[in-house]
Amino acid sequence: MASQHVVTRVALVGSVLGLFWSQSAVAADSVTFITDFGFNGRHAYYYVALEKGYYEAAGLDVKIVRGQGSSDAVKQVASGTAQLGFADTSAAIFARANDGIPIKLVSVIYAKPPHAIYVLKDSGITKPKDLEGKSVADTAFSAVPKMFGAYAKAAGIDASKVTWVVAGSDALPGMLSLGRADGIGQYTVGEPLLKKAAAPKDVVALAYSDVGLDYYGSGIVVTESTLKSNPDMVKRFVAATLRGLKDAIANPTEAGAIMHKHHRQVDEGVARDETIKVGQLATVAGAPLGAIEEGRLQRTIDVIAGAYTLKNSVKAADVYAPGFVPK
Image 1 (cartoon, rainbow, N blue to C red):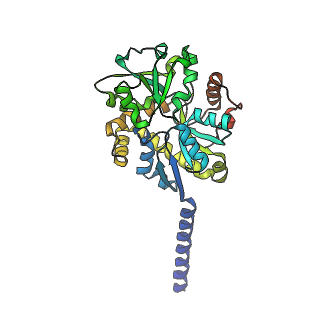
Image 2: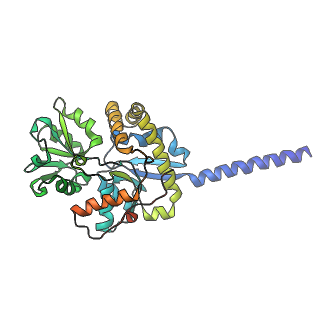
Image 3: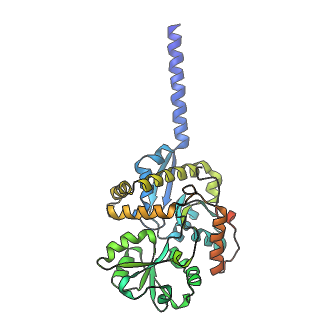
């Protein structure tokens, strides 16, 4: 009888272990995630989630790769090179409206507009009108020039009088500090790095939000096919990322140290300061972190449609999928 109990117990333990390994195998999804723009301090919260094991606990094996701009991130996700990406909301809207790319937002991280044009303080450029007749540099896939039409319209300036110059991401800070361009396109989260690169000169931001523009910035994007084939993976990725974001906002110094650990070229202090700015963009009173409000997303679409001619009209429901942000 004792022998039978031992056998039964061993069988039970084996069944439990088998169930555990079976569940682990099912949950272990390999995920490639692409950033919007290189590896910068503003991306620290993804590495916080990685370093603290939040992705692993969610059954995800996450590989983070560098993007070359929001439009590039959208294209890489659409092609399947990456399963998820971080991209500007405008890039997702343009992709859907103009190219019919079935991409959707599942979480918005920058709930406020991050777009800006940075100039040197001693350049004489102090207001939007001063940009007329000047040159502004940015990458080919950046969302800043893509949203410039809306900014120009709101600011009452002639967009055709501003010359945009295409440059590599690594060259932008130098182009500004050396005067090779009158200004550069940049998210406000990149200001700490620009200040360090331009020192001892000072930089000034002409933020798109300064002229009254209010719309969603960047968020996590995924294809409709992935949403249909593996919605649970997407939900787990979003939850783990937002957990990392929450920690990063609460302790930006720790986030900066983690980012520097994973990418030694990223200055720890700059990563800390960029994380602080991410927190300012991500935090909205009364709204859950990462949440998408359909009415506000529709207003974002309206801002773009009011400044550009879109091939096809789109509604908020066309460019986002609800239910992926933990309540």
